[in-house]
Length: 97
Image (tube, rainbow, N blue to C red; front, side, top):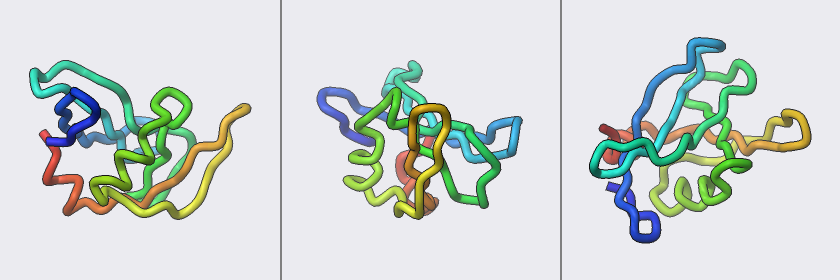
């Protein structure tokens, strides 16, 4: 379980239909959706994920705190730049539902 402030969260790992990228969402311990960690912008290699820092600015902090991935670049969309991480799937699985 990931701890974020007073929240205890789990990661749900899926795939976006468009591009087939990894989709990461955070859920409460009660199973309620909390926030989408990822954003589907463009086709990315396996295990790479655009982090939605526009809607969840703390996303990178959470990834780094729990060693969930390593930053490999950025991608722009509109007025925003989103960090791209290669996810450490062994660590992600520790917190997945």
